[in-house]
Image 1 (tube, rainbow, N blue to C red):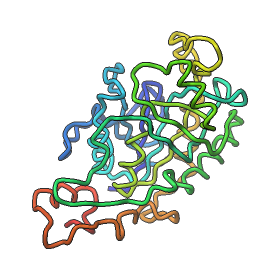
Image 2 (cartoon, helix red, strand yellow):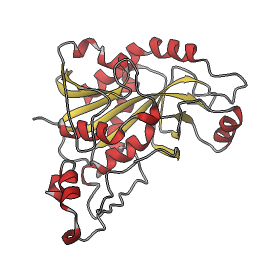
Image 3 (cartoon, rainbow, N blue to C red):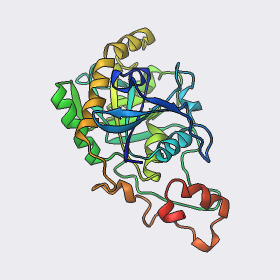
Length: 286
């Protein structure tokens, strides 16, 4: 099985013409079932696996997503990299609807859990100071420039619990705090990808100005912007697939993120927990 590019996003991606001959497969993980089956295919000669984050038909709310199963399923499918497409609100006039932001930092405002693969007798503390893969972000930047799409490389996403949008007071606070965009799914997704030793890069698509701009967020307008940008999102995925090359090792260290991270003495590892973690990192837990 070759090194696959994992894709997480919405309906506009799994309806890509480039994936017309893809095959939906079921994947079970020790952490349960992912949001949906995986669509396995190839884009621009690169093997890919696509996962609808909210399930086909958008059936699963942000706080109901089994993030651990989603990441584990992509890992089991042979993915070494994940390109995640997310819809977000903007706190910046210079980031209007239709802009793509390659996220490089996160601030967590969620209370959801679980948010780690570790626990149940094995403790791991994984470095997360740079939560996105700089190498993959460089490829995304090249693709966005090549396509002449409005974009920014680098930006901070504050992740809220949802499924409600923010109050105006919350939105003004987040804007004053220096955050650039707001979303509901970037965490724990990015954290779990790091623990699974996967390269991860979120490309956030701005759909609205959130509530700070003295108007309510209009869901109908968000959907209109998303639909208008489906072709751009598809083109971005195709370009990233073409520009990226399968690699067993990442120069940014993503594929070795667990080195030195396990705190629990090996001779005390519970066998059930060890077997479960071996699905993510067999070189450490096998």
